[in-house]
Length: 130
Image (cartoon, rainbow, N blue to C red):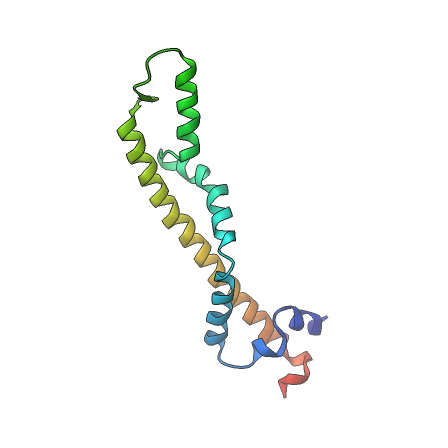
């Protein structure tokens, strides 16, 4: 079982070299798949936005649709004017990008360190440990 874990976490290539060098190398490899970050951003931005009263593009469009159904003249969305909506959406997008990006990078770095640590712990079951 340790040998399978060792191979799953990168095999001999991960066990050679400095610990921090391998963590950074793995982190860079994970960064090549930036679609994950985009999917996380789309998935969690609404939940994060609700905590501080921001407004996402999707919620702004839903609000605009609701305003058009009232039959009244549209001067904004909810209690916000169109200028306030644009400013709020822009600010929300920037804040969400920083928060979700920071969480993604922290998770990727932690995962890289965990992968290299597990690989080093399971190293004794491999032929390359000599």
